[in-house]
Amino acid sequence: MTRSRPPVGPAMAGAVDLSALKQRATAPETPTEGAPGGVEITEANLEAEVLIRSNEVPIVVLLWSPRSESSVQLGDVLAGLAATDGPNWSLATVNVDTMPRVAQMFGVQAVPTVVALAAGQPLSSFQGMQPPEQLRRWIDSLLSATAGKLSGGGDAEQPEAVDPEVEQARTFLDNGDFDSALKAYQAILQRDPTHAEAGGAVRQIAFLQRATTHPRNAVATADAAPGDIAAALAAADVEILQQDIDAAFKRLTDLVKRTAGDDRSTVRTRLIELFELFDPADPAVIAGRRNLANALY
Image (cartoon, rainbow, N blue to C red; front, top):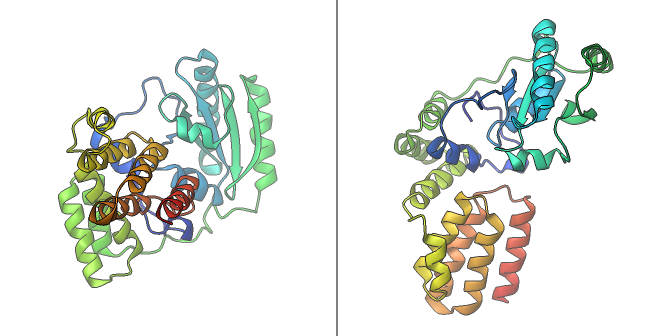
């Protein structure tokens, strides 16, 4: 995430968001063409810019598509209201075409959809274009409902000071210098082996460096040679990069069932490494661990 990072909550287990690393390696760092104003939300900054930020001020999330004219029009009106109201609330936008996983988190069924959040919880939502005067009343009601209940404004707590070594490691990561970031985080781990952020970052950077060396046809190659362990490990890496997590976990779990001895140990070890890239509370990880246990016993 190219931002100041808040302390990582228990559910994140210290992991740095894998999608953020992937996007830095593969995606252009330019806003979506025609995007409305406000903060453009990705998997990488969802937690900081929506969930955490909503503890300070109400967040209005517009889920939109550049293919929808009413989405663009609604975004323009909301951006104008946000500019008028200053720091009283924040506009965030999600392009459902490029961020389908984020859109799924909001349960979007049509665009445009608008969801208002405060203190990490949804307060109100609507679908479709609304007249500007009705939007004004809706924003005013949102501000009235949250008045005095959030920490935004001059009384907000100051952010916790960040360890300079951690800040340097994050800077390397934000700049896409994975080699330097890896070394910096490894140095932090040598000083503090329990450092959650450094541990998660080391695992995920190492994964990304390995996974991006595999050929594009790794999945097809593995499918054509189901007994080739090296091919299966490469294919699972590529499937993780492609966000096909369930397929990657299933591929290696099925291979555990068909192997024994050192081969089985190799596959099992890699599968556990892939589990550790994600939040342990992720349903895919919970199911993956259960399926692995069934395969072993």
